[in-house]
Image (tube, rainbow, N blue to C red):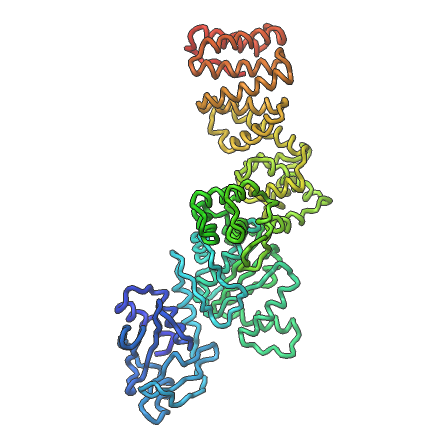
Length: 640
């Protein structure tokens, strides 16, 4: 029996005696032992002895102290590999091979230490033996949990190159971690398509894959290798640096030769985990990822333009996760205060990290901190920040600007994208914007193709997320308004929202307005502060919607405000003023306030007869509405 075949047999025996352990942990502990590394199972050491009294059909497993732990005998269906038995036979006294002293790698077995039965080293035999580690490596990958997230471990496989430590403040993301594992967890020795974690700058993509490496890296026998693709010109030198962990002698070789040596190793069937961090270019990934072999690849990118790969779109943290992160950084925060700050920051992980660090360092009052909090606040620029585990920029504004600055106003599509981004920044902060609405935030003569290309450009840079509806983070919206904030764009946005609201209200179905309602409300409240004709138009549309869904008190207030603006701006005898008078009367009538409604219907009719004439359709509507209220409101009045 060879060494890889022993692992599941010994694991079964351990689980039979110690059911408190899970199989994945047992398998990984055994692999560490067979690879010659110290191993823990839970908080206890694990060791194995073979060949006691020249018996190669049994093994003794000890978990913990020999006196206070677990000791069990494991019967082997077949004797231990005769090569190992022969090594023991070469010793001149009864002895035992302790597998914790044996090194197994891709060239075989070496460094076997023969001990006497009291544990003293008797003889060390350096004799490489041909044992294929691939079956054990594939068995380890096959045991990788896909339905739950394992605990983090520090003992990555020996060849690994991962420059970051696990973050002590990592929270949540269980579903994303499982999705990554499921995407690349196939144990078949064949190429598996990469998985891509995408999202806005500051959303925690690098933190996610780093955490993945520390939770799942032990299942990749060939090691974990991290490459920073932010500067494409430096990728080759990073690949060459992986030669050290792989124990490749590249002395005197040119960089291209060093890279090729590493790539050749990565083409073997041995499972390895490669992380292409900050990779925004599909061509770059295609150039460097292995096309054959057992490597599994994770990518992080702001771009969502990866149509052939499995994408895991990272959103902001949940309220519960945001609270946990803030309180892990500043334990004096109450739940209520943490929730309020998290909402202010739009649950963005980078912003939460900076805010929690700042609160811990400077301890301002929460009221004062929230009152001053904006994208310009010093806390969001890194003042008092704890070190970043992933060594990223400790500045929210600067993080966003890495993407924003890639838009060239002299490029036709980029210029349209800037206008679209500016338009999105005038919408309700952090609320999904209907795709068809955001496509209208540009000049009327713009072709549909150009509109879609502009949207794709923003998505490619990670500035807008989503498909059927797009989201601009509330903090990014502040950055955009600080750098753009065009009043001309605002006028376009309000016009487009107003037109979309009129179409939705025209259906008579309140549900048609649901995706648009937050943006209509946000635009209306802002416009009413100006008190112009556009404000009245928006307030009228919002009031119509509130009436449709039966929120009569809200509808009444909005129609009153629209009427006041139109009287002030257009005059008491204007047709639009008559419309506001009529619509307010309809809402009063629905509430059973017939006398008030009658007076307003009479006023609307008088204006329309004087300005539009007795035969105008709007005048006819007023006649009908007045007749209805005079009948006691038994029929339905019409808003117009």
